Length: 166
Image (cartoon, rainbow, N blue to C red):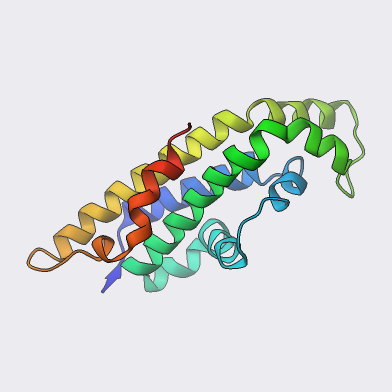
């Protein structure tokens, strides 16, 4: 069964915009790409944050939504664990990204990205949680007399651990 809920689409768009503008921007991308996240998760994150218009037409299967929610949650978890504590030194070691000459404005924007990384991860975690809650509500409504799809995805039990900072 396909999920074609406008609120879900709105949350996904909001999450994608936040991710692209604040976490996967040109100032942080090198550090983000150094995270140890499996290729499948990166593909799911890319599809979720950049190609949501495609899914507006056909909708999402519940399993697809849960897979993408988990990929985003893993990103938050590994971002906090691997990148956040060492972000400044990691970026200084990697140097300036190609095509960025560090003019005054670029330096200010880079500093803003660095200083707000933790807050932006927290905002993303809250967005993921809101989306998850909405999808579970729809899932339970679709499966009133059966087992909801989220109960079949064992890793969803780890979602809270992925989203809540230690």
